[in-house]
Amino acid sequence: MVEAQVSREFHQKGFAVLVSSLVLRAQNLGQIDIAYLERTAKKTWVLKIIETKSSIYPARSQLFRLLKTQDYLSRVLDVESKLEVKFCQKADPPLTF
Image (tube, rainbow, N blue to C red; front, side, top):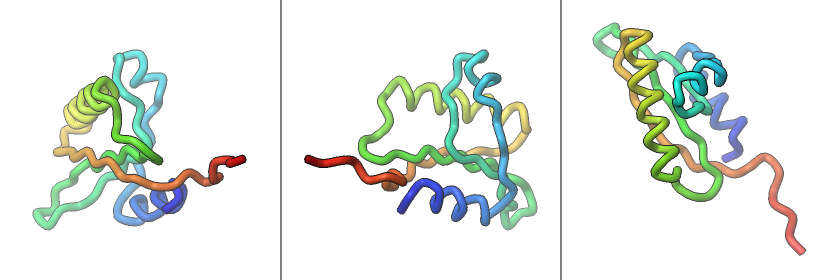
C-alpha cells in the first residue's frame, strides 16, 4: 500500500491531527507521519499515531523519540494515545539497473 493511501485510510477513521514538526523538534521529539483522533466505545477520545515505513523497522533512537512524542501529545491533549508502525510502499518505485 502506498503512503498516501495509508494516510487516507487512517484519516477516514477519525479527525486528522496536524502537529507542527517545528514544535516537536524544539522539544527534541520525533516527527510523526499520521495522527488522528478516534472516538472510543466509551465516548472518549484516543489519539492514534501512525509511523509509516517503507522498508525497515524504526531505529531504536527513532522509536524512543516517537514514544516521547506520544507521551507529550497525550499530555497536551489530555487523551489516551496509541503508536503503530505501518509498512507500506513508496509512491515511486526505486530505480533498478
